[in-house]
Length: 216
Image (cartoon, rainbow, N blue to C red; front, top):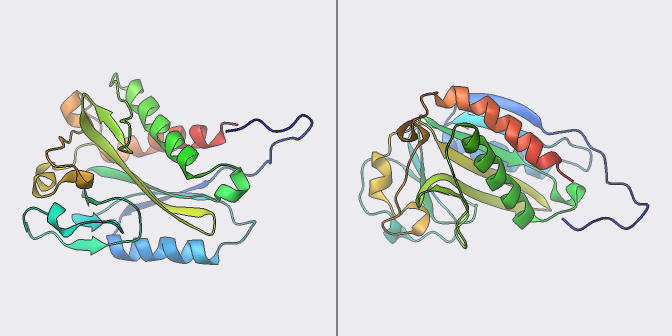
């Protein structure tokens, strides 16, 4: 983020509201994000929604059908975020970021960087060395993807967000090219020696996201 000219103070606004939605179906949650973004005004507080979804594949705007390798009976929902196809299911914590970028003064690339850093810092607390991957948004451990990112920006405001594999069943990822990458390995925190549940991971994830978003 570029420094402000001398004498100009950064804007002060409240931190995002955290909403804990539990386990919710994908499509009505997506529609609710669209509705929130369409209705919000200049003073509407930002929000972060924490939740899990029943099993679902989501296909981004540029998604190619061939990245679904096998029909395993899980519904595929074409949606309006960027990126290709990914999987959501129980045991995977999802955070949707409804953020007014105009008010914060930075763009989507900076938001993605902050989201990735929040995940890297969270995993470091549990002794997991995670990293970014050039040209492939998300967070990786030893080359295997542990967290996916995808956003939609409309009117300078974002929705969609990130998903972190905690103790999710990884088998459905074998039915797709995850995020459009053939042969991409996927991992989860449970296989990396972290025994806490996705519900227990949600609160520290929210804390790290709030810290990352608050940085000047």
